[in-house]
Image: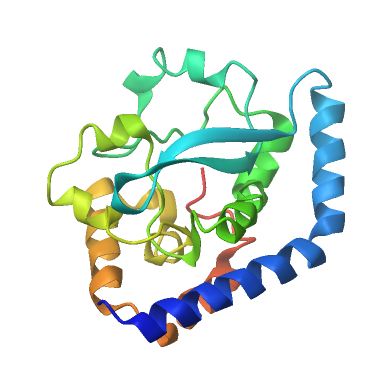
Length: 204
């Protein structure tokens, strides 16, 4: 779908929505920041990671830090415990996750700093989740079709089961969204996101 009015209005909704969200959630940002620092005073509050966005463009995606500071170095030894399929890594009891991190991950609070990525135009409120570089390295041409649009803070994958859904199904959902995206579908996904935001089911 190459609809200029849709793309322009979607961007307007993104900017307004992200701006309002950051203002409303500012107190929560402070509380989470303090909690992270109390548990691990030496570690940073935020975590940035290279992700692949629209048309395979690399950008830094922001999150509240939910893991130990050397989490990336420990990943190789944990890959054999991967609990999902395809080019993703998910582990229910990941030993790298901190106590505060466990809570903010299950409630998706760790994702809130991505509103900054939305304001920068690197992400949208709704769209496919931005993959890691190592994941894209294993993509087929079919899988890469999910990179044709801006990645999102939420999308069909998140509201359809999140980590309970394997990679192939995630790609299927993303391509369905890309083919059928509209303001109506975006609003439906956003509304459903609010209903599952604080539901820990499927989040790890």
